[in-house]
Amino acid sequence: MDFKEDFLQLVWKYQYFDRRDLKTTDGQEIQVINVGFHNLTEGPDFRDAAISLDGLILHGHVEVHKLTSEWKQHAHNSDPAYNSVILHVVWKNDREVKRNDGTQMPTLELDGKIYLEIWRKYEQMLDYDQKLPCAHGLQNTPSIIRFSALEKALVERLQEKSTLILAILDKTRGDWEETAYRWLFQCFGFKINSQAMLELAESLPYKLILKHRTQLPAIESMLFGLAGLLPESSDEPYPSHLIKEYDFLRQKYQWNSPL
Image (cartoon, rainbow, N blue to C red; front, side, top):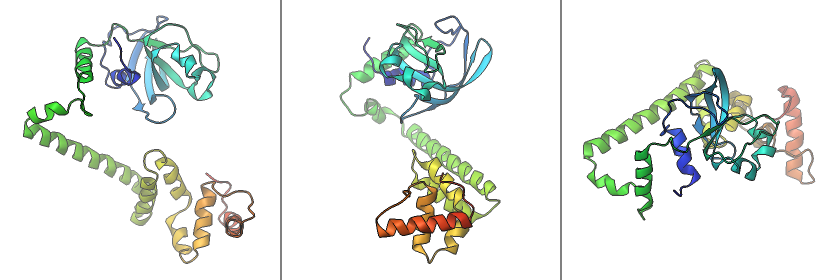
């Protein structure tokens, strides 16, 4: 059957396969502890997963391919970033592969393990020309179920956000202004750069922004400097001024280096 790699990613994400007597291609027993977080940017497909191999608990990432040989085709064997992959999930194991450091890659083959009902639903969705394959079933879904699903999603979203905010509040020892400041920075980073923006806010406390609130060049020099966005030197007047300003403030506030 013809299918795309993202189908296998969903199969792993939601564990739509027979997990009884799971073994790697070389016979090691597998227990899935945590499937990991689906990574939609560069790098392994699932981050921060956890599995047990013959009783040994491993923490790392999971990579998904249709064929094992795609590991080398995608140059993962020469990329040190993939040395932390603890499991290679594939449809067909057509060859053995190794990490960049030369260690053997544990491989799970899903051929014959995916539930038949999942295959049927996947085939049905492929037959629809609509942008959302399941859209045709929305009108047949009772309104109480649609409302409950939306309400559940809303509550979960609010709970997730409030947990993150309260964690920041705990770090700032109850300082709501500093908490709001850090949360704003994190939101400005959106999904990809949220953590980097939060670290920038932690390195440049709100009280320093207030202290220099009438000095825009000082604020810009601190932000750009701590973020590592200032060049070592410049022939342009304003960037050159920011570099000198940041060098002074870096020594004043004892910042060792950019983030």
